[in-house]
Image 1 (tube, rainbow, N blue to C red):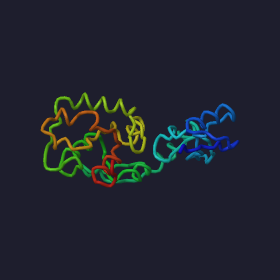
Image 2 (spheres, rainbow, N blue to C red):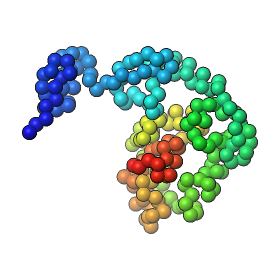
Image 3 (cartoon, helix red, strand yellow):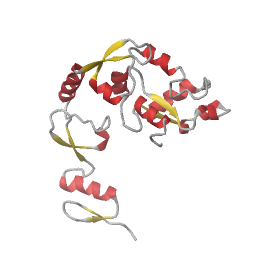
Image 4 (cartoon, rainbow, N blue to C red):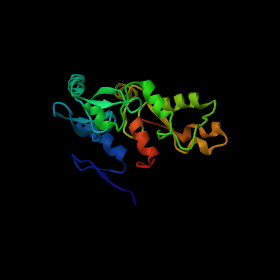
Amino acid sequence: MKENYPCPTCDKQFDSKVGVSGHHVRMHGESIAKEEKQCSNCDSIEKIYPSRRKSGDRFFCSQSCKSEKLSEEYSESKLVRCESCDEHIEVPQYRLERSERTFCSVDCHNDWQAGENSYHWKGGDVKYGESWPRQREKALKRDFKQCRLCRKTQREHIEETGRELEVHHKTAIRNFDDKEYGNRLQNLITLCSSCHMEVEGNEVKL
């Protein structure tokens, strides 16, 4: 038995979501795929496609609203210690809310990540194979340089953390004798650092 999809405006019946969606655009001048979203700065409400949600639940109706909100967030900061070298640094409040760890520089982050405190470190150094740099770039390109879980973009990730998005092995590379096979695209997924930590900590399942 075929499932019926009624038009929400005129109640005409269709046998697919594509059919009713196309009808609504042609006959009623508006896509039913859009959803209402409130601007994170001025509270105005717009109808947008889900793909316009760039990072979690945050949405800005304009570039000026985004700039205004980010400027406000950057102005609110707190003095904290670098996770790696213990130097005191001033960090925007919004970054503290999004990340459990803070670093004064990319070098300090890399030094910490190379050690056993890192969520990457589970029993020692790991060899990724000769194909890793090439496959990593392919995975980033395939995923449009966005975190596959929260949709954070490469630019947003660099602005927030000072480094590029990360590429995660769904099955850990240390489980493969053939590292080239472990680096195949089907085993790779692009993640932001926050989502990566949640996945590595088994807080989120892929």
